[in-house]
Length: 265
Image (cartoon, rainbow, N blue to C red; front, side, top):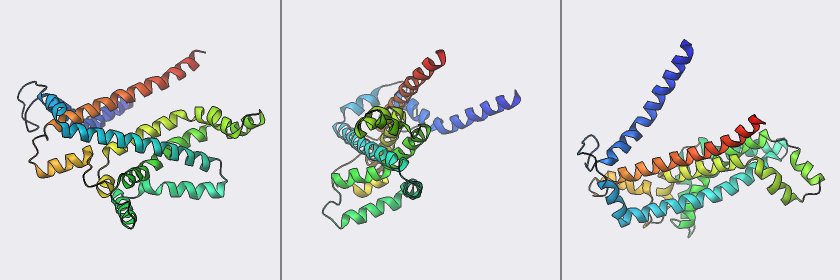
């Protein structure tokens, strides 16, 4: 009993330590003060300022479409890579899996500089192509890491069984393999969106000069300290946090329904 109480208390302390800065940001998004720590009463002025600011709305649109494009392409590439590695021979699969994890453990600044040097030798430097490719390099390994555990949980003979029963290779892939690893694909897609929304370093080294995302805009606004839209960024951050929490809850609730149905049978 004591161990259980102690473990719960430790978990609560860790959660408070991790989420207290974000919760503080959310709380102070409901006041019109220019500084966190100064409360001027409950107000939605920052949210009104946020939605009236055309530049922030344009930057938000840029960030969302970039995240969706990079996450979609990374999910396709990462899923295909995971399936290819899973069904490869052991001698080939192990080195490929190890190489695919290098961007995960590598410092992001190294990846960003490498991409910048690569694209600087072509006409594609600081274009939308270099930006999307940079985000794909960042996100694809995490998709692969999300899909691989689901493939390992699956019976490796399922694909061959589908072929023996008359399915074509594409039918076996899309009707047998993909449905069994779909939760891992969704997890990889959501993780890719989060990584893309959050990224600053790769974006700063690969984006077009007149293109901004939330991360680059916030960095420049805080660095200069003269932008009148800076307080409205608290409201934007709070909205992003709330939306991500809602999406995460929906995914978890949807994943629990099949498990509940199986337990009742």
